[in-house]
Length: 423
Ligand code: COA
Image 1 (tube, helix red, strand yellow):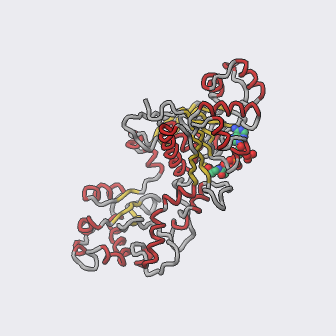
Image 2: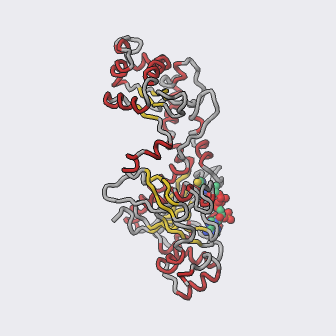
Image 3: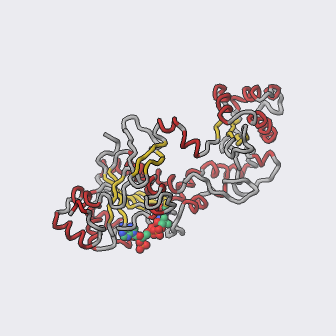
């Protein structure tokens, strides 16, 4: 028994944000039915292809544990199939460009007519307002959500981050909204609309930068490196390079091997509580009592010098040795792990955070597992479906169409070719 067993999800999502949401629901036990265009499918199936003829890693890593049905939902027969899916499912999830579902004839009003208990959940680029009609991809959301203007080095261009905070981040939020709406439905008997705009999701993740925007009114941001360097602050939260976002100063520092290994670095946090231990560790015991270094406010204008001194120590160790020496002393540090190191980490395989999956077209590949662990809900990551792999079983077993109906539906061309075993 898993947390979402019995919940049926009509998955009308594509690319990354929506599929992230429905994959999470599938991992937690929901029956997720992905609706795709016959012969075409989710565009990511054939994007960034590494094994000719096989579904791409982009697609397979976002669509585990789902079933796939192909339906041309713009044809009359396709609409009939979609209507039946809306009747049978608990949730419809979509992340089409604004207005696409209305143009198809399945806007919120219509969905409620067909199934008043249905939760209809959407990812859009922006919430209601001047940009609501825009198509949006990840980096647009990072830029419009305040992430890019606050990421990177202060004297360089805005930067996007490698973490897909706009797409995957918003997909995770949408999943929470859906589960909450399902819980509310238990009391009200009604479905509701759930909207997760990508800009909102990124702004939420950037809250400490909005915090700093307001603190600027009270004076310079003293924990930012630019304060110690004497560089004046402007009117908006600046880019803070690798400064820590909190009140405990931190930096990325070189470790042994940095000259040849682009990831031989550690993150080092000079948490006030462990300052004496840091001083002893790096061979600067006199800093424990020297008034110029002993207190956090005294250290703020000297962070460059302090981190240079700490780096002289970290450069004599590998990033893992830094961790081994600092952890017993409760000094917070973190190795800069490369994707290669993450892919090869045995511990992450054991916790199911990184999983190996078998696929009939591409063989074994690595993927991410469920990032949230429930003690009474066992997540088994299963391969993504081939295009239309479950069309026949969904039409007959899930939707209950009769043989006569099936002949008519297949003959209309609305669901792709009839597989041999379903004839
Ligand atoms: N049968 C028939 N038509 C289908 C279909 C099906 N099974 N599935 C989709 N379509 C149609 C849609 O109805 C739409 O048609 P229309 O434009 O004539 O109304 C069309 O396919 C494509 O939809 P669209 O969403 O516009 O795709 P796109 O590739 O042009 O745009 C995005 C992609 C991501 C930019 C856009 O979907 C978007 O902005 N989504 C919201 C924000 C978002 O999630 N962005 C992040 C994605 S990771």
